Image (cartoon, rainbow, N blue to C red):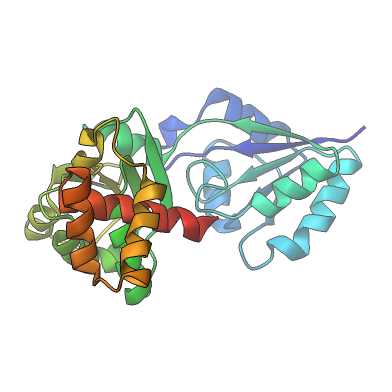
Length: 284
């Protein structure tokens, strides 16, 4: 009978956040597949757990998944963990999960700490609907496009950023987002935890040092919630925009102004609808 692949959430900082269930699964597993075996060894040693470790990271996941699935099919139990938080959330493991499920292996999530939810709930920003977009692109051009797409999002957005790029990112966000509220969470659940909210410019002005893992929560585009019920949807706005620019020869700014007058909406709302539709097409 096949074994079980457990996806075990581990502390993002404070070791007291680990659940009793997570500790039991880690103790009872035949092996723990860890993103960084040295970091996970520290966690296991702290709780007196002696389960063997094997590495599973972005550079060896596809090579090792076959052997791990074979162990699961022989009846072994494997606990998959990332360096911190919930596995697969901007971390490796998705390929192993897909392969295990395709082989008929039972996959069980053991929920627990998550930097995404910790920052989101502490931010004071809308939590009803949100989008998690992982790490910001490292390359300047890709990051610029990413920020423009996020500027048109009607939902709260949560993302990660590396400490050494935080200042540059906040400077760019200040230009794109203006007065929109942003929450910065650093060192979440640790001794020096910091959760501060303000505009990107205010956050940048008050940033003392580049340290700690960074989670950013970005308020939604307020204009999106004010669009009249009878207004054209994003897709129709995008089609009308392309009609004006590609077939009637209008420039982008003139086309947006034309649609704003036609729909009785602000140019900002029209531009946001176009960006949402463009982003949706790119993901399709």
